[in-house]
Length: 401
Image (tube, rainbow, N blue to C red; front, side):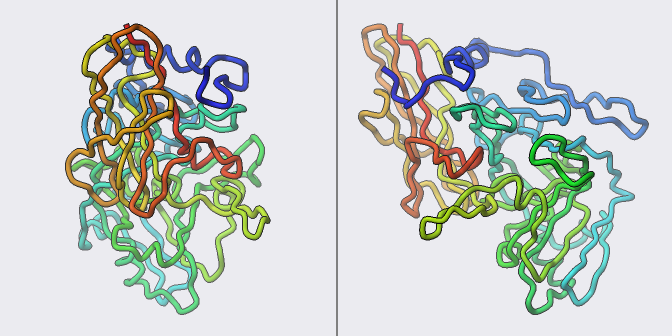
């Protein structure tokens, strides 16, 4: 009997069939052809960059997913970090890059790459998750990239606090938001359609933009950003979903009114109910969430043995307080062990020793996290969240033999 209200996708395909093949391949040591970047070099030819083991969700624009069952360390290597694009990856050169700072400021100015890197910097570790991570599990099928569990990663970032650049510009009284614009642009042809060619832009409330952890990042895991991850400079907004960490950053605009751009009002929004009235609001903070890496879906587990159930959990701007695991489809829960020390804005690895049954059979494993604010994952996806903020508990069915 299913532990979910509906265990089938919109097209009537059983979820086990829909996802089991890829997961089983990973468990068996899958090493399929590396996902290859479509980004051209300066002369227009493919540059040959590759992302070994990532799963291609879209080729154009390029969207690549980290196979979550292969999680084996707190830091995600750059070439295994998921790639999320809305348009073609722009070709930018550090020598020609400029960052314009304008709007409700006392002094508008531009920074080049070398000038930015000379400013005081900091290095921190932070998890980035796409706001649509887990969309493949929604029923009925939702519009957008069909991410499974791997549109998330944890990396080390180096950059200049956005607050320092805003201070240099002198923010005027009455300013409300900071709009971040990327160099990537294009036309959205499906509904909701864009009004012609647009850039990817998102805004931050001024208070968030001034947080010391919000960076203009130019290094990832100790090296220059790759083009796919935002070279030469991207925003990093720890604790918020990935759409806030705008890549290929070229313009920062301080505004005295809420930003109403395409990606702020038509996309990356959800319904929040105030006195019963649903109102569209922008997606912001990541939700509390635990995901199981191993066992993978449909993995065969030996009967009568100790098996290490493992995964990661994160909680946006909060901190993970506990992770619980169920091996009976959610009827009972046991505490998992949180590994290493908590790092602000980073996921926390966890594990749980499962004594597998002696008799063969199918079993459903689940994980759920609770953060220090008291938020716990829900059992079902809230439809007011549309195709975003997907953090309900998901069963992983395994076979004990």
